[in-house]
Image 1: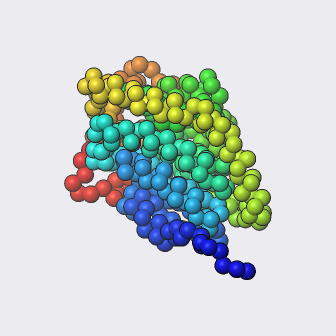
Image 2: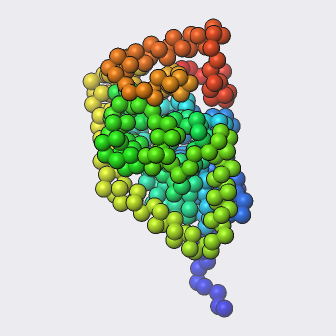
Image 3: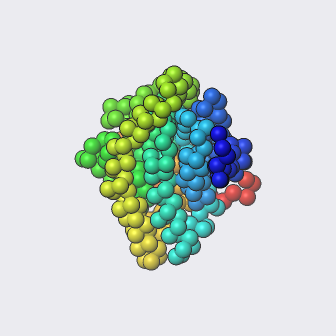
Length: 337
């Protein structure tokens, strides 16, 4: 065989991009099966402008490596993302360019890269409650634990729910039921999600990742070509949905936020729209109690920050235990909430 005029382009290998994303994801690959474990600096993932961008960047990089034959997305610890980095939103707040880039590009890419860039089978393994569950639910198959409960939280904080989670609720739950959960922020449980068609299986606590690997190894018994073609068929319904509606949703959230910024109404949980950096003040309470599983009212919305504050006071006084103390394990000493 004669030598071609030019060789294949040499892209960065696994070890190189594993190092690039080490602050946000642990990458482990065995027999072509790649496990992506979201985290922040070795502890639970803290939602930030930086993690938001890294999620979409990593997905694109993974799609360029043909050695990633099956991909599993999960989260460190016993639950999904719960906290927000209070100091990780400064670039997100800069107008006009940085905020535009974060909302116009990052919000959209985080969603679309999962179904347009990844041509291989994907599995989401959700180990427990949390928010910003996009990457797990956008997988071809999603497994969650029996204690998992999720939500589309935006409206209660005064945001337009346009980052893709509301769109997915409409898609998986049906229009009316999806609208209801999107517009009232009521939490949906593992059993709800199984019944509504959002997850594929519900397993015992601590078993989600184990089950994901079992499914991945099952797929490995198929030929590489056929399982990859199968994955493209699995992604097609979401691809069609996102071509139609994703950009409209993400731009709508951006527009609503800019209106509140212009009106001087973006701030803490008492403002007309809550700034992303204040999410951690209420999230532990939202997932540790069952208040958000019930139908919401005007009173429950108004009292949410107050109830969360009272709950934290009891935690601090030792009267009750915070089951999500691990979520704060990697916060620096000067972390500000």
